[in-house]
Length: 636
Image 1 (tube, one colour):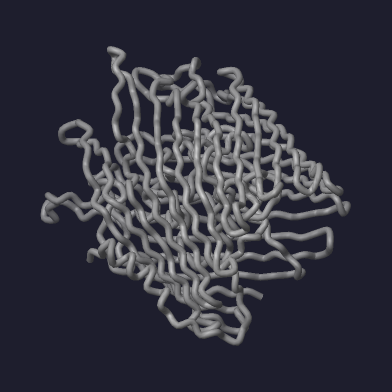
Image 2 (spheres, one colour):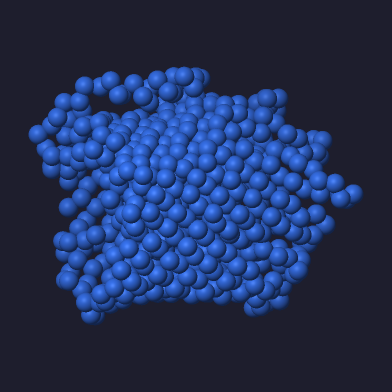
């Protein structure tokens, strides 16, 4: 069933005409723009005080999104595209932020970088994180390399697990069942034992029979071929943390995140296969925080290890393992109510197994950095920062950032940024078995943006818009070997609206436009320019309507439209790469929950792809049709 672009607009905004009957229970009457955020500058400020736009996804929104994983949750956000978010449950997802490739977005867990050195571009696997352990997510778009180092060219996604606890024991959990024999279960136990000791532990289990990831070809003949088999998926995850304060000014937080999953995957586009994979992610570490008067010192260390095993039907098994040692220490000093300075030092060490048994290949990045934050001097705010990066292989490079903002009135804020960033070559590109080049330089970026935010109706309405342009030079490509050769240039426009209409109705919507051009050089030295944003729509539109019909009953409708896109496809019959066009599509999702026992027990239902729309995210692969699940959540 095909739903039109016009229908999406009508459904998302027709709710403005709802009659909003107030309920007896008090509720928020303003959008929460005064919440403290930390990712944008590492200096705690309110969302309105930041010089860069921030997307904050809180715990309630995570639950009401109905998302099965981090990929589906992020797909519904302005400026972000996650391919295969509706694909087979065992399929790896690919995240594009403001049109940038997968390797240009940095993921953090509680402020510390995580990646997989053994993956292409060190890309973080979104399936490694269970949403049950996540308290909120902060997203900053645009280069953040001055604060966070390599890979933060397109932006940063900070997954925050720490909760604000008061009771000695809290028990929360959920259980749901849905199509494809999908079972999801989770549990959290946390609490504050005393003023100086709190804890938090969570675990999840997910299992599904799934469906065939590979699409059935048009010439498929069931009389001479077997039906494509479903590709199932199983995941276990655990996370834990303890906050201990031996003194009122010191907090020590050891933590651990572990995730293990296994699943089936097909041979390729339109090609079924009995292949299996296993993945383990292990991320222990410790955070230290010291606060005294105007001085804060934050120090963190984490060790990330990823182990992957691929078992192929037609080939030998393949094993991959990657390790990251990461430490980040910084101090914040509030010189005055309007001026704060930050100085820090970051060390990263990536490791992969070497050619010889028990050997490893490794690189190191040492980076001192500093930032000055000016707040509300006659309505003017600014962040200015610089970073020196010393890499064990290519030497030194620097980045800087300048992000001013200005309140024309208390309701109108203008903002801009000019920042540079970098992505260091991966260990595989430097030392791997195929086409390695130890002379590689980092990819270097320049990012500019400008926009405005408008607040109205007593802070119940927020409108925002921005233009951005990002250029990446010395893009690493593979010819006969890896080399710094190409230049990528992307630009776009993002519009966003949020409205809280009374106490029961909340609406949000966005429109994105993005375009990109790759400049390469042929053997004769001539520049070749091509539009190259594969699988990324030029136009996308989305939004949600959440309405409390009663204090107990919430219904949320979310929709998105994506224009047609191009994709590339290797044809095994002709042994040539072909370019194909993927049709535009519109999706709707429906979530509803009913609360009982003073909100301690909630029954919910989630429907993905409400109208059973047929669409393609990756050529030759299936996406889910109508997919319903029901479940319960409880908290005591």
